[in-house]
Image 1 (spheres, one colour):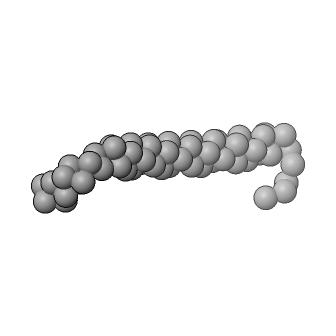
Image 2 (tube, helix red, strand yellow):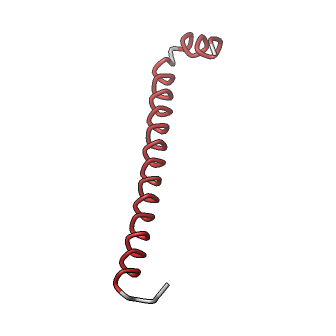
Length: 64
């Protein structure tokens, strides 16, 4: 890793390294947020299904 950084520093492309690190961190953050959103959506879907099952059971409907 140090050799790669030395090449960028020697060529004056340190801004490109910083931009790459920013982009990698932003992508990681977006993926982490998306994973949390998917998990929350799954939990909400399970809750709605259970609530629907509860309502069917106690409202007298015989549909499965």
